[in-house]
Image (cartoon, rainbow, N blue to C red; front, side, top):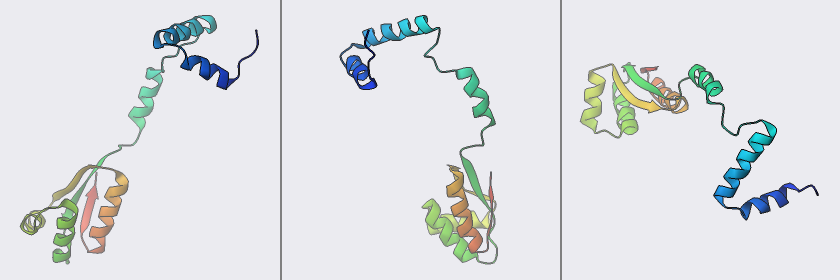
Length: 121
């Protein structure tokens, strides 16, 4: 039998139905003693040890630049001026939840430049 190139094999697959491809996969698994199933058990520990992908950033201290902090909070959260002022008056307050660590660092830099202190969890 002549050896098929990758392109020829892919073209042959394009002409097959999904049922035929499923039967082909089963035949390959049986012939070579392999499994097309992903090793879910091996992937689970890696996911458990991974760093958290989403974080929460909280404002803990407005510092001396309270007006600037209120403006930044208003800009980032999309809240009104009175809501932002009220939040800064009742610290600590959550700025954003469920965000990427990179975004949290950018937000933290803005607040810290205004003299505020933030916490990323």
